[in-house]
Length: 550
Image (tube, rainbow, N blue to C red; front, side, top):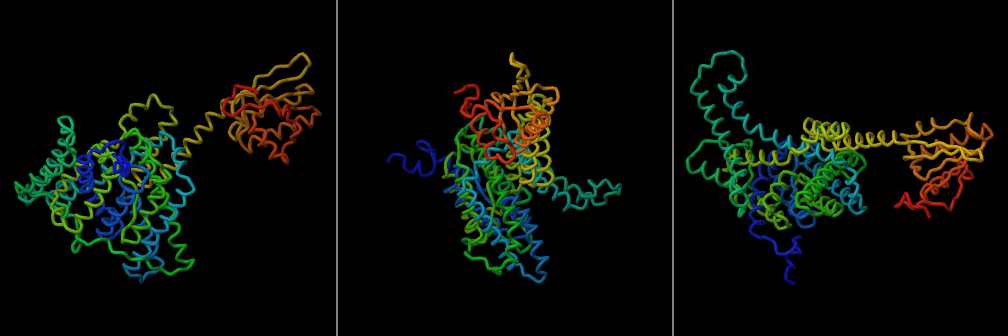
């Protein structure tokens, strides 16, 4: 077939192979420093992060639910692994580093199994329950994290130069070594200038041509300038600790070995659950964001399975696991990549760097990569959300700001999103609770009608019950639910309380015009409320047309 390969890589029509390959190369360069940094956060070898980036990126690019999305080693997972390492060492004080890694890889694999289960059970669809203000807060928080993560690359110049460090400490002490101070200023100025040059190229080049990814051109241009003019600046190799290397072989296969008992399971299970949750939240929210950018739709359940398979494979091949990366995904899509090919190229090129090009990658100036990630942070931040402050409901503004701050200060994406969803749900419940109304009238036969408007659920039952007056009402009362819905157990309990109040007054109350689902809900709760009070069991309102009566 004409476009069989195009369909295989997720392209609609003939893909732009040049764009896909160049974009993948750009992403590979951007993956290197972050994979190293995240591995070091957790206290692992840089290769543990690089191997994870390769495995996660390769598998999710092929099997994931979103062509063009990039996965790799992430800070969200690394932070959880820090806690795991601390817990393992607390339980086993004499444990070796290699044995600690066995617990880490086992945890990653268990997290993968949980993620696969979520995908198989088709629970990924529940990501739709995340409100838009939470999405805004999520991307804004990640934008701040990406930006702040680059600052140490600049401030390290200050901390490593004693004279410059004294200058910025404002200690008031006289600086005697002016030559050292001048050297520090030159190094800092050079770093900032190269960062700004990288950002300028990324910003300006797309306005001139989109034939090649601006990010790749920027990184290569700055690198060539540094090498050609012999400029002294921090490189990727300079960020490694003594004895560490980014040169390695193909990821070695090793099935992690830990005691197969309940004690081991109790150690790794809580962390596996957290990693699975954090990984899927970040991955599925990133999927939604890339859906909006590309104006297409990915498969959340397929992505869950792919993330799980990738984490299991990562644990088997000496990787620290991970999830989707919004920064690298935006680099990829902003360069024009729309298929699985770019992700495959990125992961394979990353492996090639590790196996054959470590010396070249080690010479890349950190300024170029920092400038690249600064632009990613600026692009990630949803600036339009700031203009909606006066237009959005105050509750939505509060949720968005709260999620942003929680992510920015705690780096805990799962808690931030959970808090945002809970706040949004409570705000929604409160607003709907205020909409319950009752129109009252008495017909010519002396029967009083309560025509209910608005949903009857846990938050509105108090306002609902306050509208009735059993003492002064006539002997027969009809509650009309034509414009209302009975939603939950609290609503059933409220109806029961109302019927009991009228029963004590020896008065009859009937419920009328209940929708089919409300009938079922009440009939299932016949031990709580007397179903005989329901009138017109055949007079139903179809669920999808509330105003139409059969």
